[in-house]
Image (tube, rainbow, N blue to C red; front, side, top):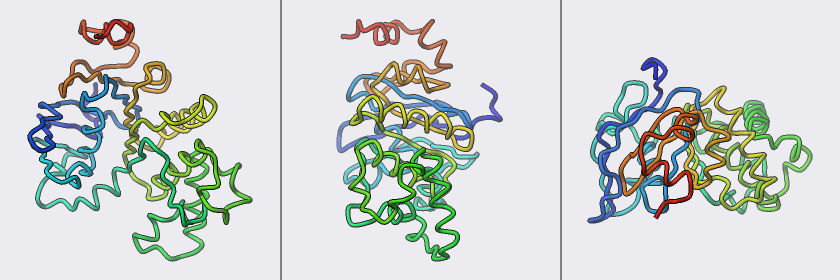
Length: 255
């Protein structure tokens, strides 16, 4: 991998919940304007890893992070770095769609912008439309923007959450199992959005779905018991895995 193309990287990253060590020294690089999929069995540390990438992990009581997460050459865990600013640069989409229940579709899309002090209606309108278009939702909601976000289907709600993250114009988008609660049609639309997003953003997605990782990612990481077992170009990881553990997981012989 060309080092000049690395947007984000971890160095000996360790994370704990109380006395439980969830990450055991993760060192890896995330290429810019690419989709990286993180896969592995439940409890292997996938979600903890991406929660560490924008310092959300530390919001949970009794947690600890050691090591480095480097964004554009700067360790985001440095005392000089504002975690709120990092979470704006590194957006997050969660497993379950979570539109704000008391807000309209429009207000959901611009919620983060308003929290950051933007009040100019023209700018809000433009960024709302831009983010909804990037999430492949604009054509479905442009005439019902005043309706509650919770009126949308599950798949539409998830794309609304993606739009809400995109409106802040982050540099990196983290997605934690964004399609796990969606049907195949809704999943296809979210995947279409993810593939398009890498033109402007660096995308990191946690997925249990091996077919999804193979379809949409450029790079794939396989984790097991808090460790990084294998990382590389997706085609190589799936077709010629270096680790026997990776091969067993991909071929369904795991466990």
